[in-house]
Length: 126
Image 1 (spheres, helix red, strand yellow):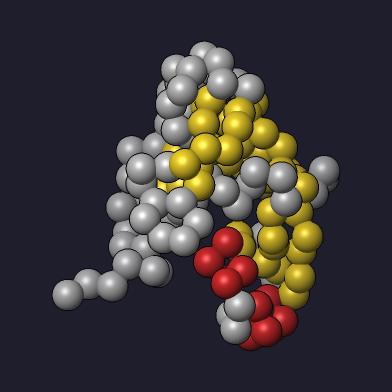
Image 2 (cartoon, one colour; image 1 turned 45 degrees about the vertical axis):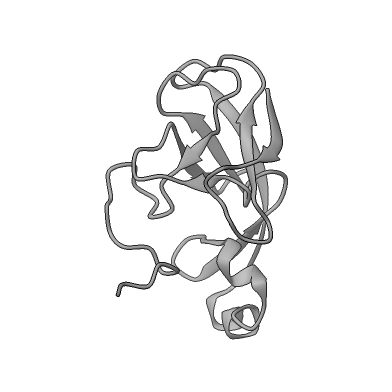
């Protein structure tokens, strides 16, 4: 259903993205990414590494590293996918927010809400 390919949206050293290998219907489960949670107070150690740009909030007291393809989805303010935290299974579950065509890059809003247009932490304003 999904694969990693070169993304035109990324121009850094790791210019990967997650792409659909077949049509995906709105609401369909795309991926269940297992998590490795850690306490928020331990984030000071992660901030010293590249992993700091790939972690997600995981409840009030934890942050999580996502396994599988979870940390490889790129950002869009008009995403075609969204995610829900599944605390019971310790996964982030990614769903199609719109119909996605085979070959399309699957994009999420890094702010966590589909319609949130807040500036991202890694984009510096001039």
